[in-house]
Image (tube, rainbow, N blue to C red; front, side, top):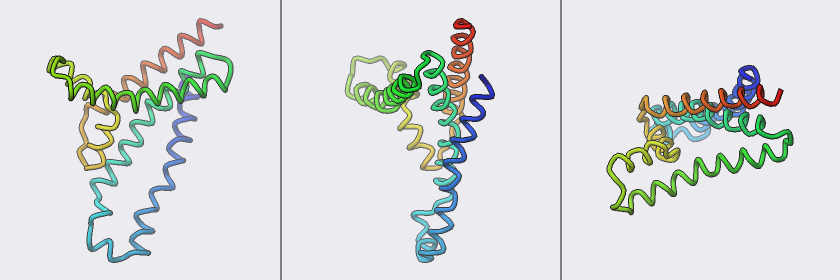
Length: 156
């Protein structure tokens, strides 16, 4: 299971490696942008790349878990898409409901805000690198890989 994850994660990272050249191309084509420093902030670029790398652990683990639950690649793909959609968009919608609802406890509101992927993306893209999202993505990804291993062993 770990080699399947490693292969998928390396492929995921390789897909994003091409974006590393965009800031360099922007500097070459639009040199006046470098003086403005609004588009090419190092903190934002580094934070965004960290978010892509760390969130990829969870996203790839969701895909591997989905493929371990079913034999059909089509069903696994649909299950992965649905799970990622719920995790990303559903978390944002629950966060909006938590902000509007005065009935939720303070700790419940903080838990909902902790699980919002868009909030993590916003923080990382501003250059704010916090350890809590690292723990969240790594622990959830490893948990899904462990459950995937148990599912595969139960089928055998």
